[in-house]
Length: 90
Image (cartoon, rainbow, N blue to C red; front, side, top):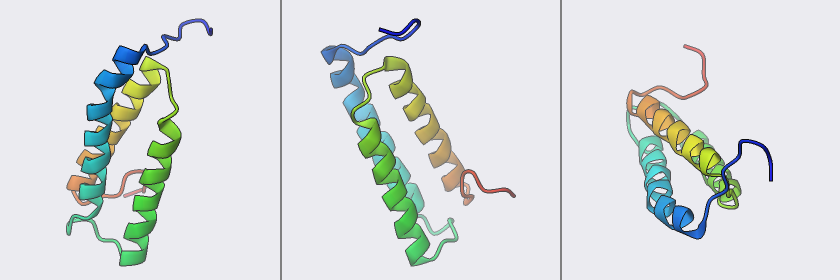
């Protein structure tokens, strides 16, 4: 076990599942927003990226990493709701 890492117990994982699902759905909904100016192909590519990230994160067992994933997802959704693409320069 690494120094400073807190590993999630079964109860922690069960508690975080609804929050992770909510963040996942929120990101997909935000990508479908008309405010985000993406072509259909680009929109589907971004959705595939979100699915891939959440599939990889499904195996995560660190409480800190799960919280960080949720924080990043919430931030990305708020940026998308403003009509901007996260990670792109202005």
